Length: 220
Image 1 (tube, one colour):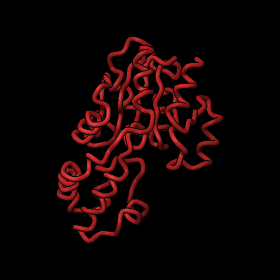
Image 2: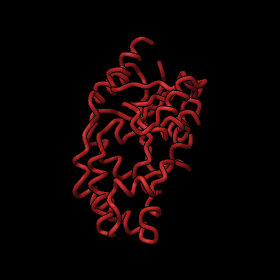
Image 3: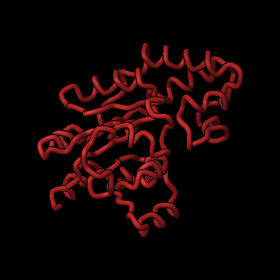
Image 4: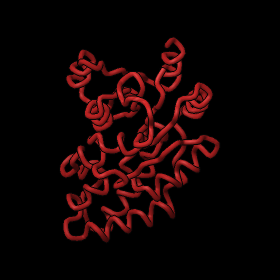
């Protein structure tokens, strides 16, 4: 049984894609850019946060476009965010088992805090880290060690899990030498990577939903 579980936010603990896509489409259209489906494929660096990608999308207008992104998101989009199925029950279960809960996300902190309060008002997270809270974002290990900077136990695969839906999350876990949990169907992670990491020194564990993770924990 792990002592701590760190979770990604977007499309892991919460459904946020509709809100993100709506807002990106609004800002891209305002600057006469290509639609999000094209922009994210052509210009996005998947090893960086959304904010860090704005120079790729908007060049010299990046700072202004990002402010407009935040303004629109808060005003029109963030209330479209809702919890992932069975996430609340899973988090309750972890709390009852004495597992400390953390969120480490590359999302803008102001948006992240609003969404956490919206989705999980009764859940106590020991720490919530967003974009820029650590010296580097995921896939660096920095957010893991920033979140766990006050723990007394060894930070390793037996004591700490990281749940996320992307290669960025899994690589963050590997860089920190903790247990990576690939959430969902791995739609943001290629099959070759999953196969390779399933046979790694720390095997990648893959679950389709929170009920499956809970069942696995109950066996430990």
